[in-house]
Length: 279
Image (cartoon, rainbow, N blue to C red):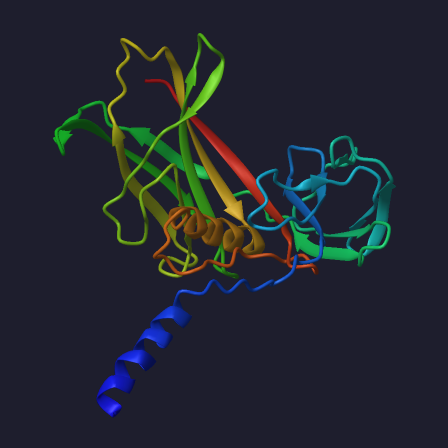
């Protein structure tokens, strides 16, 4: 009897596994989000939006009539009640060494706030490019170096970018750069901390593909040394990790850093120093 019963039980089990089970997880509620990067050369601009589901194909929803408050060292500087397409532009440029806070209130949403500071710029002592090319991975490459001095009284964070200026089209093109230093990854920028050279002068060496001047109307190359505060550094590194794992179903989920009270968006500061080279 059991011999005939077992196949019947197995058939029922298999049939049960074929049934479709739909689980309604619900739609997460919208939250306010804001994004702002302080730069001494630019007016403070805050983008305010409503959060959306990760499955939403239309992207963030701009908020145009929020109440946005800007503070410097806990002193209210200005308030804005309207932002074109979600952008609230204050006629104020931030100052290095100062701390800034943003508060945002909108309708029935929970109010949000964020706090950060603007670091001091770090001078580029020297930036140079070797004119002699060499072969690497069947490509002609050139060496580049940038030197700067790191302040020794605190932890510091940096980002290096290199681009060339197209004098005909009046446009900046990012250069893909690599480094043999294990401190760095390759990409359109290098982001790193000063853990291994705190308080010392540091020379960063890296390479790029040799430009084809026949097709690239290069006016000059431009080095950018970004002195990031901790908020900017954490956001850049986690967002870079997120983009590297994007559309990879086998990767671990990446939580992008946020210092906004709603855990949506970022508020950070950077000081950019520029050095140009004529090829």
